[in-house]
Length: 478
Image (cartoon, rainbow, N blue to C red; front, side, top):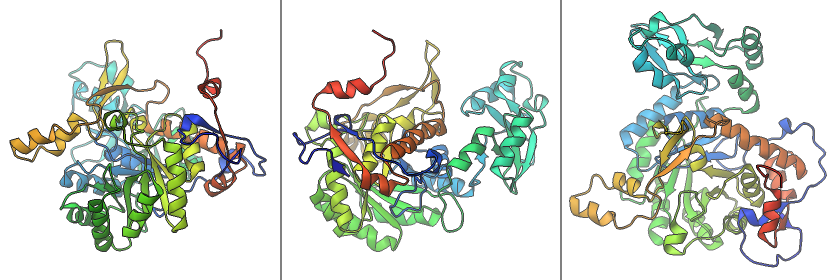
């Protein structure tokens, strides 16, 4: 990456301060742009779901890995729950989706809400032995009496064998007008294919471990139990460990990194957050493979307003990436992304992958309950990692005095109602949206891969807010 002018006229830049200049492109279709990151986890897409309670649960982790990215379970989650979630993700099919299952004896009333949490709106109906006997759609459930057995509404779906090629699966489903097909796999009653899922599997290869299972990551906090938690979750199958601390430029963080490095062997270790080259180098010297970069830029973070501490994200990435790559390591950009352009800029500035929080939280797959407002809009109640809700969950095992003391150290938004985008309800819809901008961004800048994007990017700087505003679409003409 280089700036269009030799020395920028002012110092610190956010994503909104900068833009990329078009360059000559010698490649083919934008679909052929290689989005494989060049950092240690063997992912195929440079997107990571944030290690927040309101962002990453089992469904998000599974979907992220199936589409080539990585999901990180929060350090605030119960160890037993995370272990079970990891085993569930590891047992999921690497190509075809895990659909919700419902017993044939269940009532329509008890099943309607479940179908609405999935973009394809389909439930797989199982018998008493757990074998799939049919499928039922959300639309069919909505039109039935509440006391009706789901089994009485089930229809025999199209079936595909496990080894069906995605292209063939797409053609067969679309030629029969099928919204979903049941994939017959050993031990997986609720594995299904959809036309959009088949196309996505052609665009997004899954992120897999050495045994061909979906990749997973877990976060640990700055506690004396960090090492034991990490080792226990690796036993359950976790591939990557992320040390979470909002202030990595401190000796306790470096000690914890060193202890984790010794305990984890060659497992990928990520630590952060940092916003300076000095802090990045210190974490790498302590033993981390990847440094998380970003402080105060998250959509649900009030750290900068509460403490005045942080740094504009684009400048933080540039400095930290230069420091990391000088030592043969890499960084993740954590926070500040609002649009696909921001992901392109983060990668051009030197990040290997980009962590996404609230953007992924407002999807059907995220952990918060799906709610419907008085205006009919669907939304999720979300909260920041330093919010009252998160702090309360984190300190629930403490004695009453310690819980009361912990309540005085809240920084984030306690509750934020995030509406689901009507055209991008699911996590995969958001991934499509980001990847489309990223692929096109690469071709515009003359790159066929992410390392080429980083090498060829030419960055311009807005000298006023008018430059950014000019590029934003308007709802109506003047």
